[in-house]
Amino acid sequence: MYDNEKWKKYNELTKNSPPRQMVVKAVELFGDFVGNAIDIGSGAGNDSIYLINYNWNVLAVDKSSNGFDNIKNNLSNEQKIKFSSKQITFEELDVLPKCDLINSSFSIPFCQPAYFNKFLDVIKNSISVNGRFAGNFFGKNDGWSKSDQMSFCSIEDVRNIFSDFEVEFIEEKEYDGKTAAGNDKHWNIINLVARKK
Image (cartoon, rainbow, N blue to C red; front, side, top):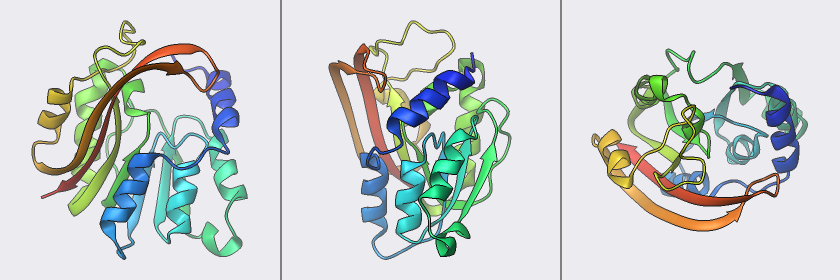
């Protein structure tokens, strides 16, 4: 399923986008606290850059390395020490370091269903107590939901997955829109910020 050229094009199209809403919300909820974050499916790196600009240390994780250069190119020399990266697929990921925040903007659905539960366990296990998850899931009515290479959830599924977290923000949206490449798509998105108890 992995198409490096497709993701390279996506990263190029999105490299000047603002940070995603859930990571902004999570940073607001942390207040003055800064710590260690992992950006899962970091893509072009906009969320990673945002976090580093707020003095977070960031480990960017993505199956494609071409977004890592965009991150480094947008950091000062002093900021670069706050950035590290790991190229790996979601399916290969067995462990992550402990962290205070995991951000995963529009990437978790691209985990193959056979690895989905393990992948989410790796994510949840890496978050320290009082740490947060911020990210998105695709709902059952999403335009891509017929794909057997992607993972989809109901809002109830998401609540169950994060049953040992305090859900601080959750919403489901459904609308017709465009992809980053400009193609028509029906979107069904579940947005979440949750704090580990």
